[in-house]
Length: 335
Image 1: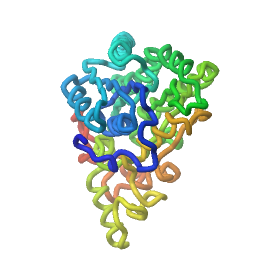
Image 2: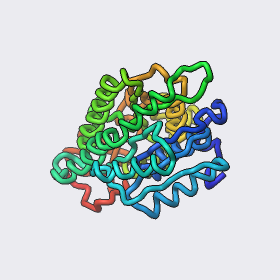
Image 3: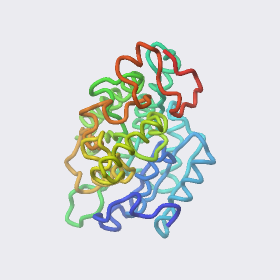
């Protein structure tokens, strides 16, 4: 079954084989969230092409994902930059040549880091816009003709209850709903992602393609959470739960989130299965927020880039943010 057991990436409510004969094309497919989404779809009968910049990581992830189902075909295509349409189009064409079609698409490649506006360079801002917003557009452009073809060949609902086709999904965030300090770049990029998908829904819905967005909240144990949440803040949340005799990871285990727990990759995978299955046949142009209600008290659960005790606006005025979040740029965390 690979390095993951089914209960880690999918709920037991879905019928085996519901995606038999379908192919999913996933950018960022080796990442924590997108690999779980892909794993769930493959487990339920799909084959997959996962796309990434790091060839070794992408190919290794593909081999591991393929283990979730006997006979599964998962193609790892590395050295692909979502900022380049030509690079993505070549990957999409290869996917169709080798696996026969592209029926579902997940635009999941993303970039993020903690930075105040005063410390955010134009190049850093542009890098996130290019990966997230332009990358989503390029992914759509490179695959949309294949999705239209799939939607035409796999009409749904149908009397035979065969799987649908022609589904596009982008991974977004919730920061732009309220604005969030230290995340202006991602807020702008994800607002663009949501708008692009709305346009896809309007323009390609009449051709059978359903286009939607999933907006995750903080997802426990992921690279994304490591880049945004200070480990001290995570530990403080766990200590508060312990003091209240709560059980972290279960309902009521995280006092800072209305649902009572942090998100899991399985939450996002299950939402993906819903949108790609026949259950999502008339869901189009929708942003499905999967965060336990956390966005309604944005910054009040695990403050992005903050250690315990850092309060708004004091940390902004003093020029201090956490030095403990993961940041590939390795720049000082001063305003």
